[in-house]
Image 1 (cartoon, each protein chain N blue to C red):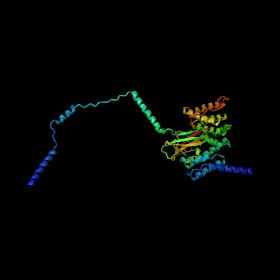
Image 2 (cartoon, rainbow over the protein chains, first blue to last red):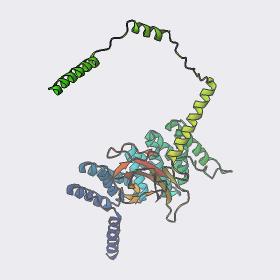
Image 3 (cartoon, rainbow over the protein chains, first blue to last red):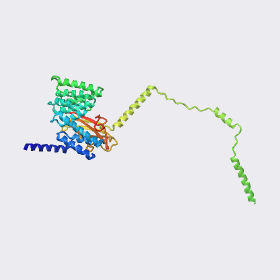
Image 4 (cartoon, rainbow over the protein chains, first blue to last red):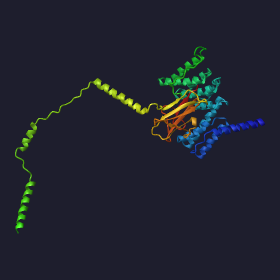
Length: 220
Length: 187
């Protein structure tokens, strides 16, 4: 009973701390919209989801002059994506991974694929590698690579234990290739094939180290 | 009586003089023909013609030199004083103490009074991160510590949202106004 009380207190304290760190909702929002968004955030907080992005989404909508109904819809959609991402990636997923997972879902990646990526990313490289992989996936899809191809490519690298830096390098290389005139699809296919060979190659000179990042890339 | 007579005589003489002045002078017969004949026979002085002759190759070279000089001048004017930061986004590869990477955002807005940056990293709070005007008077800049990830952002120039034209675009967003995107790499 004492343990339950301590857990309850600790949980309540964590929720209170999370709420305190959230940005305040914009004053321009009408009372009904504010009530709806607070309710969405309360539910997300209770479910253990990160809520900072929800408040930021409301602020973004206000800044862009969107009406209250559209802002509430956007906040609700983001909360739903975070929940789906958490279901796919597991209850212990890092907030940065959940945010990246929600972005991937909203970019067109299916929950089943996200689950598969989460399983592939359960490696010693850990959350930073998985978060970086998902960020890379969203970037590729935004560049016009079909979600299925982008997901397969990223999953392949995750299964080989690619570290965070490998995905950064991959983004840089693909960006440079596209600038040089290659199609996004070709650039991703070619660069991932090379990365797979490097990661899967037997230990030897240079095999353990990813190539240095391309300084000309847009990734900073 | 005598005075009256003198007055009458004087008035008559004045009237005669006035009538002579008003009368149109009659030119001498043949004067007009003589004048036209003289004009027609007079030789017109020939103005010396100075013709510039330039070889085509020299003209092309001169044009090219003008274009190059103009381009260089324009570049210098647009770029501002030497050492002014270029607009865009750039990051250092050296991490801060809190594992974030310093990312520099810069925007060229010569006439602006206040510029700030909003984005995923500051909760889209327009008052959160003001940019500072650089000594060149045109460029605004701020450095933000960001952990690796993908961030959507926009500038707010005198209360109006502005995209960073040097950055990638986010594509469709929830509110129909695309953002700029920066990808911050890891170690």
